[in-house]
Amino acid sequence: MRYMMSFKRLAVLLLAAALLSPFGVTAEDPLPHALARQMAVNAERYGIPGQAMLVAHDGQVLFRGAQGEADVRTHERLTTDFVFPVYSLSKLFVSTLVMQLVEQGKVALDMPASAYLPGLPARWKAIPVRDFLDHTSGVPDYFDARQGKGAAADTVFPPDLQTVFASLADAPLQFPPGTESRYTQTNYLVLAALLARQYGKPYPQVAQERIIRRLHLRHTWLGGSALPEQRVVTSYIGRQGHLEEEQELPWPAYAYGHAALYTSLDDLARFLQAMTSGELVGKATLQRLWQPRLLANGRRGWFAAGWESGESGAYRQVGHDGGTRVRVRILFEGSLDGDLYTFVYLTNGSAKNVWSRVLVDSAMAVVAPERFPVETLSEAMVRYALQPQAEGDALAQAKAIRAGTTLDAATLERTINNAGYTLRDNLGIDPALRVFALNTVLFPDSANAWDSLAEAHATRGDAAQAKALYEKARGLRDKPRDEDAKAGRPGG
Image (tube, rainbow, N blue to C red):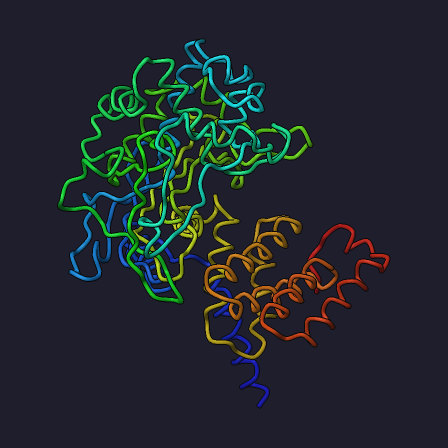
């Protein structure tokens, strides 16, 4: 009996160790195969009908592939040359064009946008260009976004930009400029109009001349009217776990600075390559503008020159989401001349409405698990949460994490806690509960870990259990902590 118990414990430990590791990259299972397998796993997990991905390192393409269907009704197979709607990735064209003007000395980010664009509402006249670029302006949005069936028919846009500005003239700012980050489409209406004013021509023409034609992006369009009839994906949104076809909104031309961009995998990769090589904006300018933004309240902003900004281990990362379905990400260590990765991940939707960030993180975990430990652990938590449960597996997984992680205790706790919330929002409360519970095994003296577990039980409807766990969390907050707890060291 003792031998059988030891064998069972060994099996659980081996399982936990396997769960901690991403799909192995070996001579028999090289990186392209491992990434293709990860894409297939993502498709099954989240109900993705079709997807395409490209990964490059220091200019060399490591992976380029597509899987699934461009249209679930016709079962047309998706290939890498299909065109996708990429939604808010259009903002990256605007950001790039603004950075070009900054580099040329024609626009200063700390000058009011009204200095370059007369006719803005009076409340906006002192707001710097930088705050529009980084979504810290406080201006309200100009329309109510809807998704799903009927949204395109029900959405009515103002006839022109002047009408938009007039409709917002009496609306109060959401917060003082430069004090908070809040993503609004109106910011990029202003910037696209600023670009049109600077160049004396409509914004779509500016983007065509200075980016699309310059880079020979032959599968890229602003606005849906010029799209080819063939080889364009059908877009879907998840409704109660099922795919529902989604019609694109009838975006007016003045909105093309924040929406209505259609492009292909290779064209997006070419755009990122042009950015990181200094072809569109000089590397020195990018290094300066792609720095973390410190807001007036002392917190870090979400954006740097309009690109989502953050870190992953030793790497700076910038990028952007599009419609929660697609994402681009650039990661570099030190400078753009050093160790540099680019990721392009495109989908035509998913039954679970999975966040695009989750998909790119899963690819990073396969490409370089030792360089991207946070993303690797996050992906491991998804796999752990979805595995069949076994007695003692939380303890075994906790031991495997302690033995294998390079993360400090605070980052480890935060990563697992964030993974729990990601699971909750993408796959439901039951798998999230397993990860929140695991965090309490790793950090038994953490009030936050117990509070998150209590919240998860409350979400699930376990009121009595949630109450008990909330009380435990309160007790830990009120209790003097020993030196190990103060140091944030894992328990056990």
